[in-house]
Amino acid sequence: SQQGEEDPQALSIQEGENATMNCSYKTSINNLQWYRQNSGRGLVHLILIRSNEREKHSGRLRVTLDTSKKSSSLLITASRAADTASYFCATDHSGGYQKVTFGIGTKLQVIP
Amino acid sequence: KAGVTQTPRYLIKTRGQQVTLSCSPISGHRSVSWYQQTPGQGLQFLFEYFSETQRNKGNFPGRFSGRQFSNSRSEMNVSTLELGDSALYLCASSLLSASGANVLTFGAGSRLTVL
Image 1 (tube, rainbow over the protein chains, first blue to last red):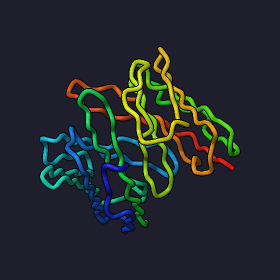
Image 2: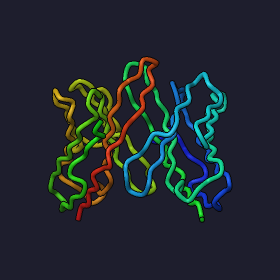
Image 3: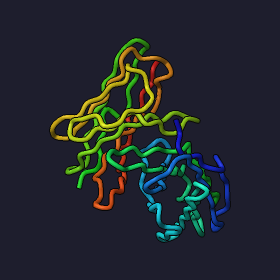
């Protein structure tokens, strides 16, 4: 079963615009991560935000976390055609054993 | 530093056959997780191994099994293949950080087609 659910499932924007993706989850987490997947390949880790953090930045990425609403958002600023990919949020329930659970993902298309 | 290596990258099987997929984690990573990815279903967790022990298992039938060797390399096996098993199978290794965060490094995947 999925823990996270991304919204929207697909997003198409023009190069230079900002892209915002949202994620909701169901149970308490240790941290939340965002990954990127280029078509048909493995996922690449982008950024991790801990449950006691509210916002985190990494280059053009900004992640927020609201544990009271069990939601997170990923903002990509000044998007580029190379950002075209699927983005997944993943919830980490570490605490004795590891099980990172992924959502269905948001497919982002950046039009040059 | 070599990444996570999955073999084979592509394979075609027929219904009823069985398949074994292999995953070599990053050197020093002792945790290996397997996921099944199908269109519309996202990544479904299969199982996770640490030091040759299965620590966690997803909601898959018993046809799906795995193991981990002493060198941390892992294999997963699917027996009596069904058409619905066609998917991209992803392996990820991780090194649990001191803070307890579990960041996964993925391989490129093994794409299985069942005819």
